[in-house]
Image (cartoon, rainbow, N blue to C red; front, side, top):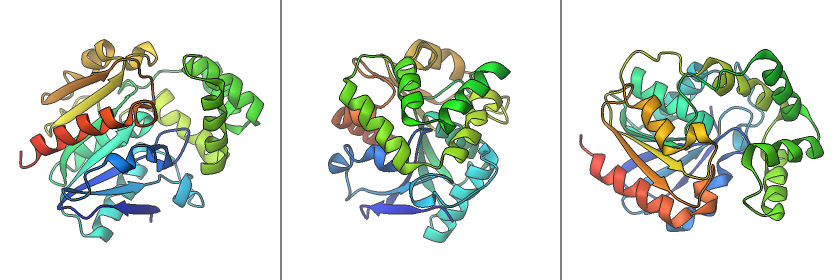
Length: 256
């Protein structure tokens, strides 16, 4: 079963998943601002990350979604909200499609295209080499991917956390999830309430205009929110604002 920890004891259950680089410790800067009376926040690490680092698997959307439901069953959660970040937004979207009776609402933070980035073979292999490479290779790639808007110290911090919280072989395998395969079903509408939240300093495919265009047909109940002067990591770059936007949506979508 996935490793996790619980923050808060409210009646509204929320499961938070990690991104490609790190485990859910990425949320550490935001945790002090979370409403722990209304919500019970479970931070769950996908296979190969954090508390689940020793778990191996196929690194697919379907596998990860099954792991989430297994954990929810163990917690005795009949219904819960799901928050995905970057690659795990595909897991959250898939759950909202295939387990709609269990999902109260879904939050997609800085989501990649549901059809994937459609990396060609050369790009895919180059990024696999980054995932398996040393810190110098990862640092160079991170500067290209995230740009130089934030400090060199922040990039060093991200490299350290990447190394400390993830298994390189699994990181390399997950690349296909968002780089090549995407959401398994891109034709079935997601009827549950969905919030897509973007950072407007993120890469262009993950900014508001692109996300709205790519997700509008898939999510009839889509809401959009954006944070300016923020990139791919709103929980680290703008934590109080992120928490305010997410909690407002979760409260409003409760009971729908």
